[in-house]
Image (tube, rainbow, N blue to C red; front, side, top):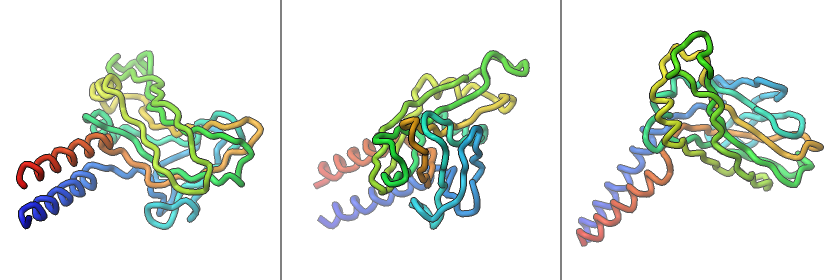
Length: 212
């Protein structure tokens, strides 16, 4: 029994180390916008509302409809975005009183140069890679949303170099066009796919059962 408890403690420690050492936070917004910028009409500002990592979050205000809310330079992240199981996650909060739309979606896009822009080699052609839109809970609570990087896209990212003209992560919002857009994001991470850690956990529990 003592051995089982020891193994369980070791497993928990291992999982925590894997998670903390692998995740790269690209938005905690404690000292500004952390490199995120508005490419269209969205207004980005800091707010304590919606904070899940530290005391500040990113508030996004815009008109209704589909918008590319914010962009982030992903060139320094090419290595982790091309790694097995890579995903992007964000904590997002929407208050129903802030919007009139009965629905809202949020999405992530990997956007890079295309058609040999600036004469770069074809291996730098990424283009608009939509990771999909997810339905957002309109309950005033923070929820974590995650997008896995498909294998084919990971392979493309692995082939780029720093001469690529642009390589960005785009945060997308979409709701009824008659509504305003207002939401809060925090703790944006490039992380291992959740299933990777889950499998590691199941493997560890299997080891415990065999040792009992």
